[in-house]
Image 1 (tube, rainbow, N blue to C red):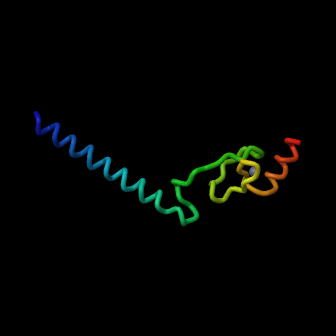
Image 2 (cartoon, helix red, strand yellow):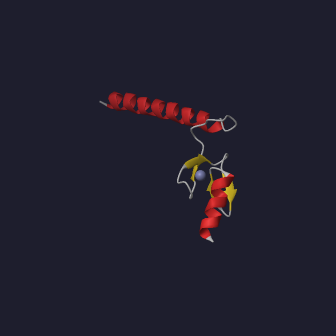
Image 3 (cartoon, rainbow, N blue to C red):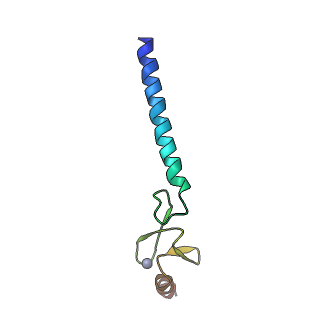
Length: 77
Ligand SMILES: [Zn+2]
């Protein structure tokens, strides 16, 4: 009975280690163009999500392009 729990615990631990190592590998690849661990930001003008690194930042907002930033700024005034 105890051995069964021991094996189950060991399997759960191995699974966690596998998941953790794969997550870490994804997070490390920030230099590449398409990494899944990248934070996404919402463009308040066209309501589309863009990777934070590629986003155009203006007035504390993130935009997909400079045009959106300008259009949004014009809308606010
Ligand atoms: Zn946009």
